[in-house]
Image 1 (tube, rainbow over the protein chains, first blue to last red):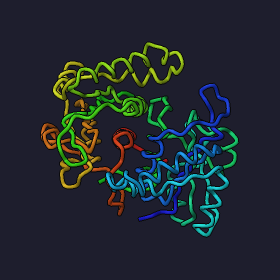
Image 2: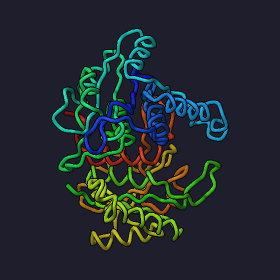
Image 3: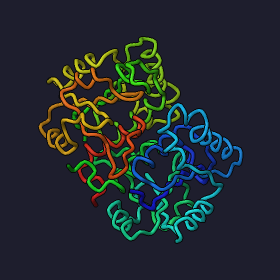
Image 4: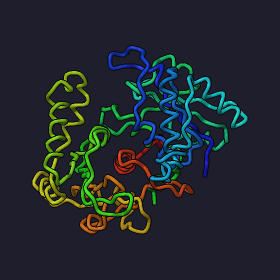
Amino acid sequence: VTVPIWIALLHHPVLNREGRVVTTAVTNLDLHDIARAARTFGATGYFAVTPIARQRELIDRIVEHWVHGHGAERVPERAEAMRLLATVATLEEAIAAVSERAGAPPWTVATCARPGRATVSFSEVRRRLGDGRPLVLLLGTGWGLADTALAAAEDVLEPISAPGSGYNHLSVRSAAAILLDRLLVPSRGES
Amino acid sequence: VTVPIWIALLHHPVLNREGRVVTTAVTNLDLHDIARAARTFGATGYFAVTPIARQRELIDRIVEHWVHGHGAERVPERAEAMRLLATVATLEEAIAAVSERAGAPPWTVATCARPGRATVSFSEVRRRLGDGRPLVLLLGTGWGLADTALAAAEDVLEPISAPGSGYNHLSVRSAAAILLDRLLVPSRGES
């Protein structure tokens, strides 16, 4: 089952620990872990978004290794995941690529661990996925998406929270896995 | 809310790509990501299990850095997560530590991505958590827990699966995050 959902992992504009807008460096395991989760849950694609051309070249080389190079020979199942990954310079490019592929402009939903920004819940996103409109889920590296990235999205998804925890510092890799599970597995362990 | 649940991440006995039983090296982001997920979802503790003393020393130094050293000054919230992490040489040591801390021998539930091994479902584990018996969730690095580790556990949890995907190659970091979310967040985005 391939649902029309894309992940966009932004390396800019995101916040650093002090709350300043920065461009982060690529983390190799962000590429692998989120590609594997995307493949597991049937997402259509995964964009690594960075304005730095050398970082995009690095990612492209990593993808090439795992999809067509020695990595693919050694670990064939990794190729299935890594082929979902593509690089773009900006969110706008990702949206344009999805629009062309899906034939309709996607619904953009940003994720944010900070409280008070949400405009949609998990259940609402699940309901609207049924409409068939393509969805692009925006995730931020570093300390999360900057305000301009949140504002550029049509909606902001409620944070992943656990009752009484008060701790909102999951890695972006863990957050991506949980988001895809919550949005794309209807029963999620209800059996 | 702290539920009596522990994670045990085994570096032995686990499988390599060829299905042989091996001892894996520690991956730094396994420590961080799973500690952060454990803290987010209110788990009581997280054991990194490896028979290699030098690897345990390495992990202890990493924990020290983030809980009491410069890491704690720079990123205080990381200390909250990393202080859940402790090293042991064997699963038996982890079980003994939990028994002493919780005052009762824990229920051991192994995780396995391969089909056909499961003896309990997510919903059954959730139900039985209500009994208050401490639970130790076993996760394997590499290509997953070896048969002897599965056999050493009282039960084997159903795989994390997505409808129609047929792909069971999540990273252990992603699997741990999803497991904790499925087991410890009753509503999981039902709002």
